[in-house]
Length: 59
Image (tube, rainbow, N blue to C red; front, top):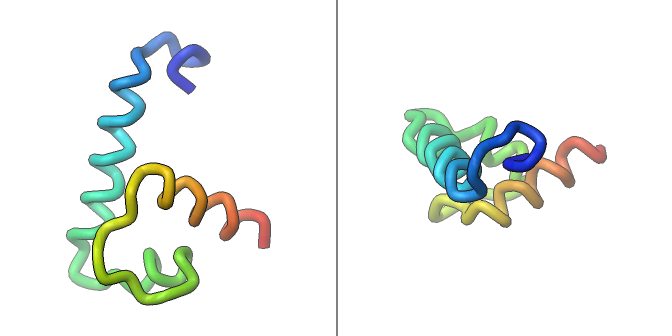
């Protein structure tokens, strides 16, 4: 993604962390848990988040 949009890889990583934090801080995490397919006790890592989204979109 970084190469495609001419930005640094660290920007992509940071933006993913920001997105995950925003999703995690929502008062109602039901959609995030729906995407994950399970209850979450802690925020997912970047790679876990991407894996969750990919699995969700494949369904």
